[in-house]
Length: 538
Image (cartoon, rainbow, N blue to C red; front, side, top):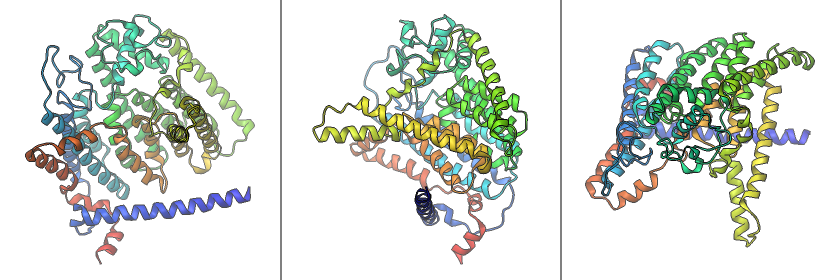
């Protein structure tokens, strides 16, 4: 055991050295090769500058909206009548414009780059200078979110599956047994990704109830149901912002910084609002539940966490952490049994209530691994399995089946995540239990069978309010790289530009280059620690 601890300490020291060098290198590149180096260090002058990042972020989001609104944009599903604009007409014919296709890709990628730059610098300012007006940040969030609210569903087709499942629910077709294709020739079926056409739903009864209710309110209109789901996710992001402010005040952190890192996070805006993923609802209920636990309202905290778990199962981790920490750090294991029992009771009542309202039983539990059909290198547990299989086949060991290898690597990934989660639970009060919960959620994503960008929001939102030390770097890194996971268009852009006319190449370089180097304003100087700036310029 002593030898293992020694190895662990050595690995951690090496990691810290490597991470420090990486951060120093990034800062050096930013100082030398970006407009951040234009300004001399100076004392912080207050928050009157907030209109500048607000406007720049809005411009970035409008660029993404514009690029995603082209009829042949690769960032959305192009099918007649699936949105109010940017979709082909039902009788459209002819070849799509290659110029418009490439311009769509250029605008989206340039908008993403500009958004990441603005948000990253704003986050750093918030870290160094607490006390920003929450009201001003709410207005900034509304400004940034507006283009995504009106944009077509982007970066994913999952919302069309939700709509189809809502239609199934309203007609009492069991989504836990049947897939969306059971609707036959319904207009709800056409936009559904064939990968999920016959897949039963892995979502909890609370979501099915909300989903079916929206479908009934819209009188079974496919597009109106999709809009209703988008509005629901916008409300859920507002819930995240509301909960994170309460949570940070409860643990004596700056609410302004946590608000920017969570509700204004590019990952949240692009995938939870732009993609209209139900992860927003789960995360919203989970954040409010954890905030109530910090404020010492444990029963209500358990109720909200149980509602989150009735959307998507991973939120059940919140129930475990709230129950375990109910009596405080000095409670014995025996004393903790009573709140654990209360947690089980509250959870059972809450899940039973939503199950009764939805009317389809607990079939969702057996469907929780449905997303395992997706095979992506972004998930280490899946990527290792695919690599092992490829190596075996290269050695003429063709009897090694990919599905068998994936079963083993994914199982070990789950065991590793579960082991870390138990350790974090038992040590949560020493480390900070909110922070430990956030890390546990991220580990279940990273070690799970598939890593989707919107899954990362589960843990990042809570980590925004509770991070310590190096975790801030990883929070920023995952937030700015996450939206690019699986993003289409990059290869087509490079291949298309090679064969394009010089004018189009010049326009593309101007747009992307401008997004990378355009000066963002004097306010960015306050994103550097003053002492470091003085040393760097002396």
